[in-house]
Length: 170
Image (cartoon, rainbow, N blue to C red; front, top):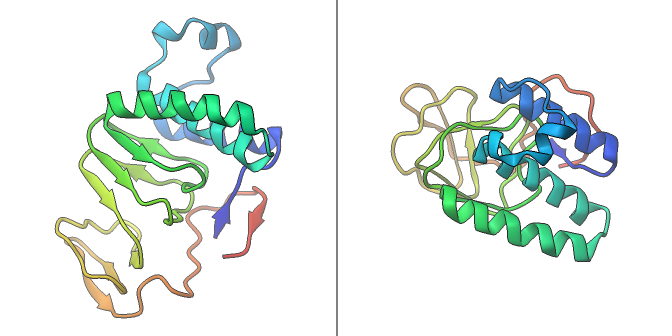
């Protein structure tokens, strides 16, 4: 399932889901202006969602400006994440190296810790603990993760959560 932000309501819903997954209470407009009190990881996620909205609605100049902010803050935090990868409810837990390939599509309620590198063509089962490299075109699951089959992610539809956001086909 691929989730995208296409309207202001979608953006607000994604941000609220992200806040909830981080355990942060709703941030007021006044708090947004006083950015010293907002955790940098949350600021990064907020800018990433804003960038996704601008890209998906064709706001080219604004998306270029926000993209620069996302890249700068991402470099400080150790994040290399392309827009439009994660569904709602993203939780980036710690700063540190996080690299997500731009062709990945990750569903709702993803929780990413430091030291994560996600490439393509691998399906990872829910709650799997992947603690070593896995070859392309496989499905892994379990704790620790083991190869379940050699089909990979092709043709799979995984529902990460019961959410009511606009969805596009895979």
